[in-house]
Amino acid sequence: MSRVALVTGASRGIGRAVAERLAADGYRVAVNYHTGSAAADEVVAAITAAGGEAMAVGADVGDGEAVTAMFGAVVERLGPVEVLVNNAGVTDDDLLLRMTPEAWDRVIRTNLSSAYLCTRAALRGMLKARWGRIVSVTSVAGITGNPGQANYAAAKAGLIGFTRSVAKEVGSRGITVNAVAPGFIDTDMTGALDDSVKEAALPAIALGRFGEPGEIAAAVGYLASDGAAYVTGHVLVVDGGLSF
Amino acid sequence: MDRAQVEEKMTELLVNELGIPKDKIAMGASFEADLEVDSLGVVELLMALEDTFGVTIPDEEAESIGTVGQAVDLVLEKLQS
Image 1 (cartoon, rainbow over the protein chains, first blue to last red):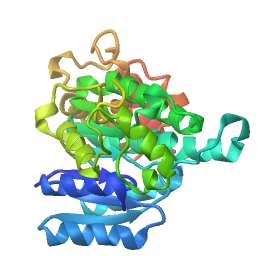
Image 2: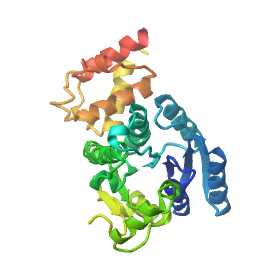
Image 3: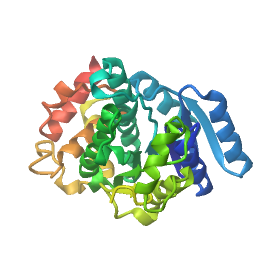
């Protein structure tokens, strides 16, 4: 039986590309969404049409009870989660002096606390199986910082520390924990940026273009694979040469 | 379930879930010192106990478990309550 993967925030953008990639690699995929129910159904339909198996599962991954319910639904339908991709993320940008406590909390909760909740829920089955893959989608912003994104960068940097700590905790049980750090990727999230910001970013990117979601999905696919069995606690930067 | 049955299941679980050699398991054996179970192993053991015996073991009570016999005692206590 093929392995089960759960991708959070998979109704669009990088999450969608990861879900489709893992399905193409033979995983049975749970496509998590929060508000985009129709979009998640579309992802499931696309995977099914391509000969894969997937289910949509709604949950606010920053909410502990919702995460418990989500894992219950996935385990019942597909079986224990063997590959977890912590991808769900939001931005709520502002200069720190103007950043509201709500904007801070929302971004930390959705981008960072979600990884704590989902990883804890997934680990139980992985420990039993003595095999597991956890991949979190962080960001170059969490490494280099970005003005206007103190909340987002803090959450993404937090994910890196989280990844390395958990990698040390569970490595002896055949479970790897890694992160992928995208730079500017062509998604709704970067689509919301001003054109002037995008144009200013291009000269800093060695490859001279924004990345495609599929290029992040390929990195996640590698870290989830058996070929990456000896890679753990690693942050794989996929940014077209933005940050080196 | 009586004590002998819990002891037998406990032994089975330690062998199968934690990979401890059967001849090392004794009721007086300490998980850390004698059986070389690390801190994550203790957490795994508790999860396995909960699944196997259908009991819930709160973290603060789990801290009192030092030996195999103490784990049996706690499971028996939970089964009876």
